[in-house]
Structure formats: structure tokens, C-alpha cells
Image 1 (cartoon, rainbow, N blue to C red):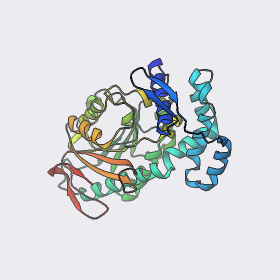
Image 2 (image 1 turned 90 degrees about the vertical axis):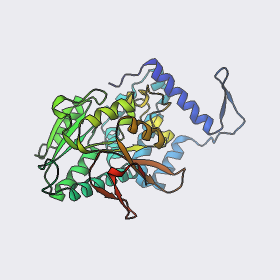
Image 3 (image 1 turned 135 degrees about the vertical axis):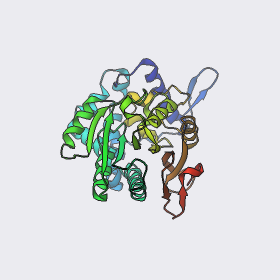
Image 4 (image 1 turned 60 degrees about the vertical axis):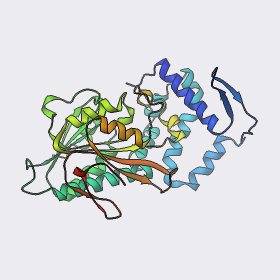
Length: 335
């Protein structure tokens, strides 16, 4: 699952050169691909000193910095193959704990999960009527659920809502699905299955879910349109596909998760796993759904880092945080 091909490693190293270019430490000759060191001076402060300084100054991001520090301190031997980066991450209990905490509680990730929970709660409450198409329980499908960071929050929130629901937890990894079964063994609303989003859903799932949700996963597939089309097929005619995705890369991600295969899988014309909002819009529309986007993060063009993307069919009304009602069936909205 995580084995790197030679081509993927080339993409990874080229991205690291992009970091140096961004800092104006190198320049590249586009004609021959040759890199040249510039005259820009380098800060010679040891990374260990910077790390020790940054942890107390930014305690809310401590787990991110710890995780990046663990991988970056072994970057050279990991790139040459002398060390296994995945063993460094998953073979150490403390490092694995930092990764789990990052995926569930890091403020930038948590804000997207909270927004997703707000949307699901409002949509389910607004449509919990005897006249609702099909009646019965709301059915939710989570794809790429991974280490359950989103699942923990969403399931607890929906349980408090008191509206009957069924929640299907899926991931490509059978190991992660088995771990989730143990974690949520006391949740009667939940079932578990492995799922490859780049293939058609099982026949019994076609047109059966009110919501398909995913947090920072679909970008790690080969073709966004193929994956989004597969998920759309699992939705009912009144269903909604809701994604939370990073829309602006942060260079530390290329170190922290750069050795994960999914970070370099893209074969659909993207140059990086993280892509901008307009590209998501195009792929979602190609996949056959209407679209509504809530931009997230601080205001200002360069500070937007996340988007809540909703691929819509015909369900209800949603209100944004400024209180304006948006009727999904009327078209494409950007908030």
C-alpha cells in the first residue's frame, strides 16, 4: 500500500527543490532542469534549536511540529532507502500517537470536521420529516476514514442529535477497518467495510446513501473525477457528497506525509496532491453533481487553506455562518 515507485520518489524530491526555490535558495534552468544555488544566505541556526523554541511558542501545533521533526531528522536516509520512513512513523508508539492526534485534533483539521458536523446536523434536522423521500434512517458513508479522526467526532455528534442513522465506516486498508471495529464496538449504528473509491461501489450500495463524507482523502487518489463519480453513484437521488479538503499546500506536509504513496498517486494532470478550489469544482461538475463550497480559514486570498465542498443532488436548505439560506437545487454556490 505504501511502497514508493521510482517515479513517485522523483516527484517527491522535485517538490523539495520547489521548497528551496520558494525560499530563493536555488533557481532552476527550465531548459535543462539544472538547479543553481543562489546568493541568498541560509539561516545557520540548528534545526534542533528552532524545534525547541517553536514548541512552547505554538502549543496548539505541537503535535504537528513533533511529527515533522521526527521525519525530517531522518529525511536523507529515508530518501536513499537506508531507512524506512513508515517504520519510523508507525513503528514507534509516540510517533503514531502524534499522527493520530494531528488527524483528529490539530486546529486546522478540527475546524473542517466541526463544519462538516454542523452541515450534517442541519441537513438531517431539516429533512427529518414523515414526508421525506424513502423515510427510515439516514444512511451515511464515510470513505477513507483512516484512523477515525473524523468518525469519532461525527458519530458522537449525530448520536446526541437523536435522529436515527446508519453509519458505514470504510477505508482501503483492511488493517484500519479492523482497528475501527474494535474502537466502535459499542456503536450499534455502525458497520464496517473495505472500499476502493477508484472502483464502482458494491451493487447493494448503488443509490442507497443520503450522505457520503470524506475528510482529506480523495486528493490521495489517482483521478479525482473517477473517485467522485464512484461516490456519486452511491448516493440516492436526494443525496449529498460532502468533502473537506486542503486547497493550498503547506510545505511541511510534503515532509510529514511525503513518504505515503497516496501523496504522489495523481495521474489526472495534477502536479501535486493538494489542488485549488477551481480544480475541485471542475472535477465535481464532471462527476455529475451540482456544487456548493464553504471556504474555510482566515479571510484573505492567501490565507484560505481548507474548503468544505458539497456535491449536491436535491436535499434541503443549508445556512452559512452569516445566516443566508442556500437552496441546493438552484445551482452552484461559492460562500
